[in-house]
Length: 363
Image (cartoon, rainbow, N blue to C red; front, side, top):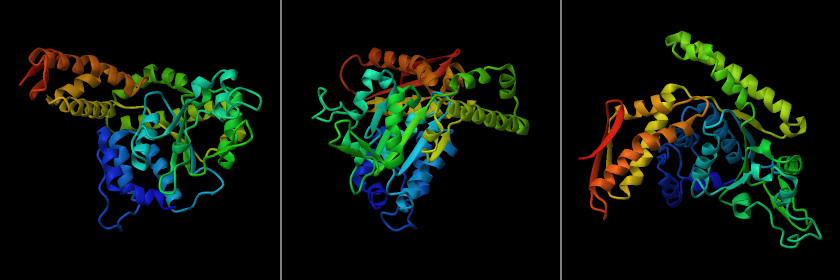
C-alpha cells in the first residue's frame, strides 16, 4: 500500500497541508525518501490538536498498520470511534489527518449524522430505492473521490455525531464498517470504503461528564498542585472513561461496537492546555492579519488572560475561541480600522493587558 508513503512527502501536497497554519513536519533524514514516518506525523498532529496525545497515538497506529499492509483488505483501513467531551478536538483531529494524508483539512467526506435523524431523510444515505425519484442517478451523501481515494491517496470519511442518526442509517452503516462496501438502494452501484479511514465521532456521555466536572470536589482538585493533583486528575480521567464506556454500550448495539477497531477517548482540557490552545488560536489570528499586511504583536500576558476568562472545561476549546473573538480580535480589528480605514499599507498592532482588559494600539 504505497499511498501513505509516497503522498506524505510529496512537496506540493506538503505545502498545501501547511496552509492551515500548522507546521509541516520535516522527514527524518535517517529514513529513506518517501518513507512513512510515524514520529513526524505524530508531531504534526500534536502541533494542531493539543492535550490529546493518547488519541493521536491511536490514530497514528491505524495509519501505521495500513502502511504496513496489516489491515484486512475486505474492510476499511480503520474504523475509529472518537468519543469524549464536546470541544476537545475530535473533529479537528480528523481534519488534520486529512491535511496530512490528502490535500488539506477540508479534503474529506464529512457526513453530519444529525441531518439524518429523521427517517424520510435516511434515504440520502444509500440513495433512493427503485421506483423513487433519483434512484437511477444513485444520489447519496457520499463524495466518491474523497471516499474511495486512489492508488496513492486514501479516502477519509467522517460520520459526525453518529448517535444522532436514525436507526435505519445505523443499520446501513453496519455494512460499511463490516465489509467496506455500501450497496446503494437502487441495487446497481456500490461505494467502496476499503481504501478509506472511517472515523465516527460521538458526544454520548457528555452531559454526565459535564455534571462530574462541575462537582465541588473536582473544582477543589483543580486547585491542588504537585503529585496529589496529578493523581487526582488520573483518577478523574479513569472515571470519565468508565462513564463514556457505559454510555456507548447502553446506546449502541453490540454488533455495532464489535465492528469498531478502536474506541479513542478524548480527555477534558486542563488550564495549561487551555493556555496552549489560546496561543495557537492567536497565531492563526496573526497569520490571517498578516495576509492583510497587518503585523500583530501580542504580549505574553494576553493568552493567560483569555484562558482565565474563557476556559470552561465543560465546553472545551469552543469557549476559548468565543472569548478570544471578543477579548482580543475585536480591539485589534478596531485598531486596524482606526489607523488604516482603507488600503493595505503595512501596519503594526500591539496588544497587551491593561487594567484587566486587552488594549490594541498601532506600533
